Image (cartoon, rainbow, N blue to C red; front, side):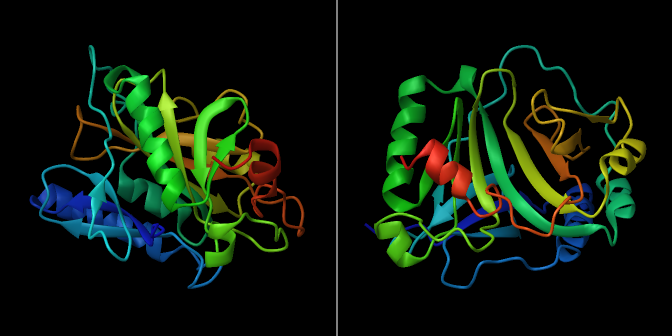
Length: 255
């Protein structure tokens, strides 16, 4: 079966607010140094701006033109995360010149809007088309960029950095779909906490030693949320087992 070539985040550009938001997000993306494994490692992660109604995420391969991920939908009474969130322009200004890579991008799907069987069926289909690995103990599988032979067998080379990965989260806590972008920085934990203090920034329980998170204002409030996870400056020049994919491959296993 043809493997996935590209995973694309597609954003609307119908209104002035959408176009301005997209321009600022593009500025952030352009400031991220390329850390691709190589042109033959798939899937790639792409960003596009088109005449669509709402942001979407799609995947494509050689034979299929484009397939849209079922993101779920907003459920129950919405609690806005935008009231205390900063703008995308403010984020760009604070991170300008401080980004060193993109570890992963991903989507959180509200569990209340997608039956468990539909979620499992989606993962089964993705596992046929990409190197999909479990995250131990959580419903957070990751697609790891892989060469063609690795896709056909398994990933065994852990001497290289495998980014950006793609995460899918079956989220029991969110009531809206979330786009998440995990960016690597050269900022220490103290520096990030000072740049993004409470309540603008926050720590996800269990991951507070790794990155600081924040939501960003955007033109599609009520339909979705957008979160950035900002990794602290690496403490070692050696690649970690997370960066190489070894931890997911060995501890999680392929799906």
